[in-house]
Image (cartoon, rainbow, N blue to C red):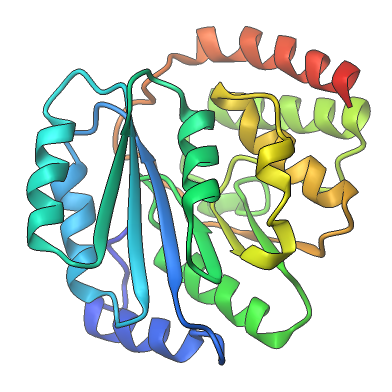
Length: 249
């Protein structure tokens, strides 16, 4: 979440210090759907504290509330913000669109209700060290810092087990925030055939199979609003799609 213990001035300095050398732009990709309740409270502090060289790209997809109108007003006010609107609700297509249109050399993918600045800083430092090209945030590795309800944690562990068993995934999470060197994954988004909730999983697994050096680190996660799609509907769809992805790969 954006409410860091350090305060925004220190976050600005920390982001500037973590900015990898010889990088012209860091682009933060944020898919959004029906987020009028938290859009301004989450985005505005970020936009006002980001140092130069950072661009925020919001991919709105099929919102039926005031999200598109609020985004329009914000893009008029903040030069570091751009937005694209897609006609239908589709989280995976929104993320894929953001990756395909991205111009930054370093890409950060995060959700509006997370925006873990500390993860961004740690991820960029790892990329700057030259030892890794893809930093994946993990709710599982967060341990006690994961403040989600027990049933959400149990669902994550179940899906992780299936990813390891059926897809050979060498990790604990595919849906957390990401910090990526764009040139390392340039061709991978276009190769992904799944959309909706399954795109992030296919994207990470294809990156792993392509030999991209991926490092997982924990994220700080506390839900600030209910998930748009109830868990009782997400789990059966996820199980089906993991099996379909297993067969297609």
